[in-house]
Amino acid sequence: MHFESTPEQVQLRKAVREFAEAEILPHVMEWDETQTFPLETIRKLGKLGYMGAIFPEELGGAGFGYIEYATIIEELCRVDGSVGLIVAAHTSLCSNHIYKCGSDEQRRYYIPKLAAGEWIGCWSLTEPEAGSDAAGTRTAAHLNDGEWTLNGAKTFTTNAHFADVCVAMAVTDRAAAQHGISAFIIEKNTPGFRLGKKENKLGMRASATGEVIFENCRLPRTQLLGQAGEGFVDSLRILDGGRISIAALAVGMAQGAYEAALRYSKVRKQFGRPISEFQAIQHKLADMATSIEAARLMVMRAAWMLDNGRRVTKESSMAKLFASEVAVRVAGEALQVHGGYGFIKDYPVEKFYRDVRLATIGEGTSEIQRLVIARQLLKD
Ligand SMILES: Cc1cc2nc3c(=O)[nH]c(=O)nc-3n(C[C@H](O)[C@H](O)[C@H](O)COP(=O)(O)OP(=O)(O)OC[C@H]3O[C@@H](n4cnc5c(N)ncnc54)[C@H](O)[C@@H]3O)c2cc1C
Image (tube, rainbow, N blue to C red; front, side, top):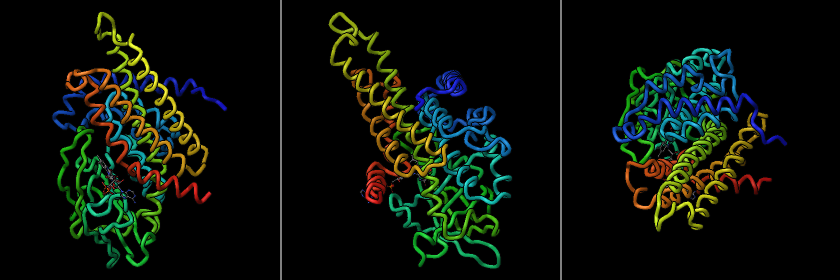
């Protein structure tokens, strides 16, 4: 077993950290308060290769694996979860669905633009009536005279309002249930495709989350992604990788919150000494650091397995479940270490505390992760 990062991985972590501290950190609160989508920063991330980390170089990607991808997401989220979420939805959901299930032509057309960050991608599975039960999709697509017509609406789509391309799931054969849902690639100017409400959120406020609506949205036959009827099953495979990115996102935010608490505990004095000298505070720091380490190891193991061609349904769900719950706990403890100042927006923990709540919900809630894990355990 090798627990050491390669020199290239160490260098990558350093480079992303430097970028995040220089280009993102100064704007974090302003973007949060004004709900500003950091488009310029996303373009810069694209130029650095971080918007297409997991795709081969011949398609314009960085040619990295999930270990490097998780490292990128973690380091971005250590500074701002919203930026990490934008990159994650774009990369491991939208772009990866096209990469894994698309035809050669679709790959060659879409992946280079997406990997360069010239185009932004979004991925729409969730509907108002189909959240955890995503197979309950109501959006429908019909094939007539060589054209698909889509009708319906998707909710909670990350990046929706800034996306150039959307991958969406729609029912093509209701009788076939889970094998009757197909995936489609929709470009933003397609007639009949429009954006609905942009949500006003508790956290992750610089990432745009919103509705996408299909009203007699007509698509050439070539915009079907993968096999007809297999879009939902493919989505589950895509989510196996996606959950690694949400787990990495959770680790990054936990790390950011923990570091803020560690720093604060050394400078805040009560009873004539830094609060870091009180055993109660030391125990909180020790528990935070230990649980973050454990979560990171789970994320990296799942990433390593995926990079080595293994099926990771159980491991990515375990990593996502554990890391997201660790992150919620750590952010709460980090806030507690700050006392009243943790409640104030001048300190970064307040934002971590809000942002981190998404981690136990997005890409499958903790309850659904337990269901997925248990199903795998019972199958084994
Ligand atoms: C900020 C944000 C970004 C998002 N981005 C995207 C995106 O880009 N693309 C996309 O498609 N979706 C996205 N989502 C949607 C997200 O994946 C769903 O919100 C999530 O899967 C839960 O669905 P729901 O909100 O409908 O909750 P519900 O499914 O209604 O769940 C409500 C509660 O019931 C529980 N529950 C439901 N079913 C069961 C069960 N069988 N057993 C036990 N408990 C259960 C849940 O765990 C939860 O606690 C995003 C959501 C948010 C908040």
